[in-house]
Image: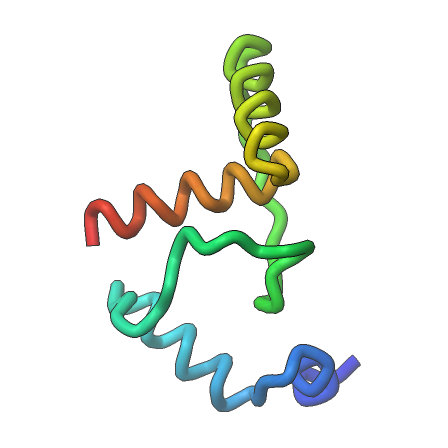
Amino acid sequence: MKDSELCKMFGTTVEQVESDCEKYESGDFSGWEFGKPIDGRPKAAMRTTSLKFSETELTAIDNAAKRLGLTRSAFIRRACDNEIMAIA
C-alpha cells in the first residue's frame, strides 16, 4: 500500500503527516490536544512498543482502565499524554 493510499484511509495527506512529524520531533505540541478519551484506536498511524510492568502495576493499570471504561492501551496512552503535557 502506498503512503498516499494509507493517508486517504485515515483522512489526511502525506504532506500533513510530514508536517505533523516535523512539529512533533521539534518538541512543539502547541495546538494539539492530549488526554482526551479516544473511542477505539486513534486515527494516527500507530507503532508498537514493549513495556514491562510488575503484576501489581498491571493489576492497578487494568483496574483503573476498567473504572474509566478504557482498554489497557488507551489508559497507558492517556497517562503518557498527561505526562508529556505536564512537562511541555
